[in-house]
Length: 199
Length: 187
Image (tube, rainbow over all chains, first blue to last red):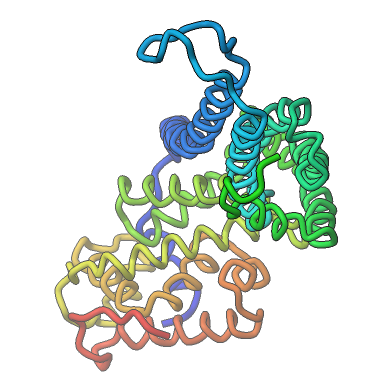
């Protein structure tokens, strides 16, 4: 059989109907929205949990010692400076543990289109917590203050990433993290037991 | 707006740009999926999977080559994987085709239903890579470089596969061809 004869036969093989464009596009949009929604859930939840921890910690520190609270002694023990320092350190350590997770995730796939928006939301929440802690005794501790400053810089870089230049910006951020060993130092402080080194 | 700008806008969350990218390329993807499966619902599913994957991974598109080539690579991967994993049972009867009857039918333009069924069977008997090349080139008009890009092979390999596919099809359509009844998936 000659090629042109075969070709005539082939033309009729599984001849496609008109493309159902809009029906398929609606399904694609719906599927992508559902997936994006699921992916956004966990960093938002993590950010919310971190905010809650920070809020509880700072709330306890700022509580008026003279004000009785439910379930406590009518005359509470005044908080010692060491106890107050421990709370700030513990709160900072939790922030650093969260930052470790965020920055590790960002190093691995920060520029993936479907991840970047969620990472930015997460980083923005963490940046707010970092700035709050910089105004507490943690921000006056030489070791913590330095790390809080680096973290603030890195988080600011992440939240201001230009999606069109993400690869370039991400390389720049990774370079900074590696040069200062920021992740290693964050992990060291985050894993240190809180009661060994009160502020 | 050119395609590069559409991609940039889609990456920034512009759904209109995303839709325009989709509209520019969906026909070719859907037609290829339909030609390969012969099933409208399945072809829709494969087309949707292709675009979902493409939009999810849009940031990975480096722009080294045309967007269509990158997209068709995803499409052929999706279609190939689906056909292999489904391992559909052979639906057609075994049997050869009388070349004289075939040529006569082609000349008169009246292929009877049985003959067409046998032709479909012969095409489905090709291994998946050969079938993809044959469908892309001879049915959907893809060029050899486009096929090579989509299948991740050198152009020479794509040409050789097409040549083997045509030869095997001719063999399968003759009485002397190997008995039909099972589908190959390798290559």
